[in-house]
Length: 217
Image (cartoon, rainbow, N blue to C red):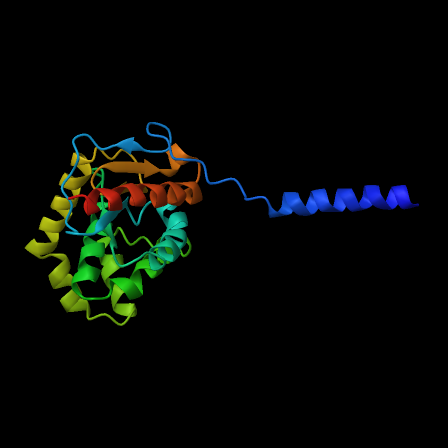
């Protein structure tokens, strides 16, 4: 009995020591596998901060799936990280009204309230918001002044922002969405990392690198 008790005690201690052992660190992101270098590197708009860009479209089902994860992740970031979205069209006529919708909501100060609602309407309720007449009617149903919205939607300012977004996407050589860029130097996507969750883990590592670069300037 004493011998068996000693064996059991030794096994218990071994298990306890194993439990206390540190967990393996997250795998280091690898260039060319988990992310790619932006060539040439692009200027950023967030001076003194780490700029993180999401290239997306309201019409993209993968962007719709990614949005809740990105929103939660964004809220957990420090003050030195600035996340901004760039709605792109890839030259698709059906996506252009959605890019204009994004900037129109932004101009009206309605983006925080409506961003997830737009995704839900398109992908869950199947509302064809890429059709302008439908979009305008839907916007009015959400308590937004219809005339003011249409004036902004058709404005030169919004048209210019949509055009600029396509220029930025071209400079980054975006081929699919959602794609994320960090500090104007790094780019990653779910197709590279294997999942949206892994993409965010990769971005966390890239932010550390970008933050260190800013500190040395």
